[in-house]
Amino acid sequence: MDENCTFCKIIKGEIPSSKVYEDEEILAFNDINPATPIHILVIPKKHIKSLAEMKDGEEKIISKIYKVINEIAEKQGFKEKGYRVIVNCGKDAGQEVGHLHFHLLAGIKMGDKIV
Image 1 (cartoon, rainbow, N blue to C red):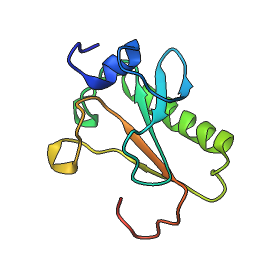
Image 2: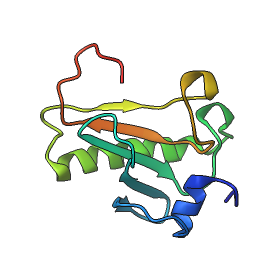
Image 3: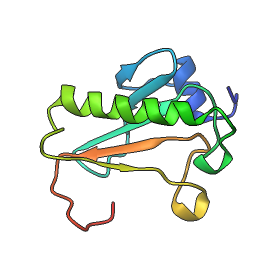
Image 4: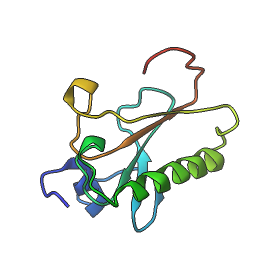
């Protein structure tokens, strides 16, 4: 955990969130500034700054995150219509919080629109 990280504070319960999913390794919650009608952030509980800074062995959590994303889509009823998953890596890509996170977007037809 990084004591200055917003997402680590959410994981510890210091900042409230609207949880969608939680287990011992992963937390998913609704984004407070959604870009689409459904905008869920899915994060590892272990502090990993970004995709570019993953260490050996940490790739297992990525696989599990994608499995959880599929489960969330199924349970929330948008799996069949479709969804988009975005991972921003670094400031130039738009990563605002220095903690690896996956944007799960759904609820509108996106087509080629970049969100």
